[in-house]
Amino acid sequence: MRWLLAAFCLAAALQAPAVGSERGRHRVQHGPCSYTFILPEVEHCQPPGDFQVSNSLQRDAPPPGAVPPAQQSSQDEKLEALESVTENNTQWLQKLENYIQENVRSEMEEMQRNAVHTQTATMLQIRTNLLSQSAEQTRKLTDVETQVLNQTTRLEVQLQEYSLSTIKLEKQIVQQTQEISRLNDQNSLLEQRLTAMEDRHTRELQALQAEKQQLQEFLVQQDHLASLLEAQLGGPTQKKRLLDLVKQCNQISVQPKEETQGFRDCAEIYKSGITESGVYSLRLANSTKTVKVFCDMQTRGGGWTVLQRRQNGSVDFHRNWANYKAGFGDPSGEYWVGNDFIHLLTTGQDYTLQVQLTDTEGSEAYSQYNHFYIDSEEKKYSLYVRGFSGTAGRTSSLAHSGTPFSTKDRDNDRCSCNCAQMASGGWWFDACGPSNLNGVYYSGKSNVLRFNGIKWYYWKGLTLKVIRTTMMVRPGNF
Ligand SMILES: [Ca+2]
Image (spheres, rainbow, N blue to C red):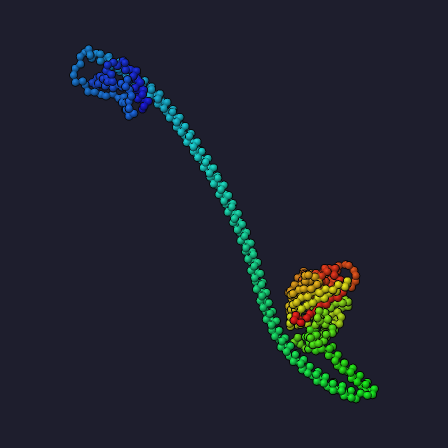
C-alpha cells in the first residue's frame, strides 16, 4: 500500500501544473451523475502513516443553481483534460501496480523460498544435532550397559567362588565334627580301659604282695635249712649233698624267669626286677593265652616289648593275612609277634613305638612315636601314630593314621595295584607309601635299587640297605 500511495503522489505531482487553480478538487458531470476527484497536493504530499487513499469516484448530487455558458465551456475543457490525465494516471498506476505486484510476488516467492531453504537448513541442522546427540547417548548407554554387564559377570564369578569356598568349609566342619566325635568316643573307651587296667593292677599288686610274703617265708625256711646244714657240715658226703641242694635252688630261682606268667608286657617284667634281655612269656589281656616275645631290657632304659625283628633274612616275611594275624618266626631271632597281640596290647593302655634301624655301613638310627596303637581285625588292623621324633629322618616314614594293614591276599591299600604283592610282605601300605620293614631282606652288596626290599624312605631314601630292624613298644608312662 505504501508503494501505491507513493506512486499516486508522484503521478499527482507530475500532472499538477496542468490542473490550474482548482488544485486538489475536480468535478466531472456524466449524464445525470457528477463525479468529484480529489487529487493530492504535491507540494505538501507527506501523508501520515495511517493515511488511506481511495481511488474511487464520489457521486455528487446535481448542482443546486444554474451555471453561465462561458464558464460552462471552460469547465468542460478542464474536465476533459482532467479525465485524460486521470485516465493516463490510472493506466500508469495499473502498470505500476502490476509491476509492483510482479516484483513483490517474485520477491515474496524468493523470500518464501529463502525462508523455506533457511528453515530446511535449520531443520537439517537440528536433525543432524539431534542425530549426533542420539548417537552420543546411544554410545554412552552402550558403555554403561557394558560396564553393568562386566560388573554383573564379576559379581557372579565372585558369588560362585564364595559358594564353592562355603561348601568346602562346610565339608571341613563336618569332617572336623566327625573327627571330634571319633576322638571323644576313643577317649571314653580309653578311660574305660584305664579304669579296668587300674583294677587289674591293684589285683596283681595284691597277688605280688602275697607272693612276696611267700618268698620271705621261703627265705626264712632256707636260712633255717642253711643253719642246719652248717651244723651238720663235716664229711664229703654232706658237701656233695649241699652242692646238689644249691644247684636245685638255682634251678628253682631261674625257672620262673623263663616261664614268667601273668605279665602283660616287658615293662612289667622289668619293673618286677628282671633286667636281663631275653625271651619271656606274656599273657594276653582278658585271656589265659600266652605269647612268647623278646624283651629288650637295655635300649634307652629297657622294658621294650619287641613286635618285629629282622637281622639275617632267615625268616620269610612274604606271608598271608592269617600268618600276620597270629604271628610267625622265632622270638629269639626274626619274627612278627602277630597283629591280634599288637592290637590287644596297644589298646589296653597308651604305648610308645620305637623303630630301630642299622644299615650295612653300621649306621644306627631310630624313629619314635609317643602314641601308637592298631585297630582290631574288623577294622583291618589300621595304624594310629602321633608324636614323631628320632634320628631316622626328619619326616615320619610310617603311613598316616588310619591306614589299614595289607597282605598279598588282602589288598586294603589305596593303590590300584596290590602293594603287598609288589613290595612284598604285610604292612600298612598307603599307595604304596615310604616304608615297609617287612620287605625282602637283601644281604648282598648290590647297588641295584629294589622296590620290594626293606624300606624306611626318609632316613636314606631308596638306597637304604638294612641289616637289622626292630619294632618295639613300651608304655608311655614307663
Ligand atoms: Ca590296591
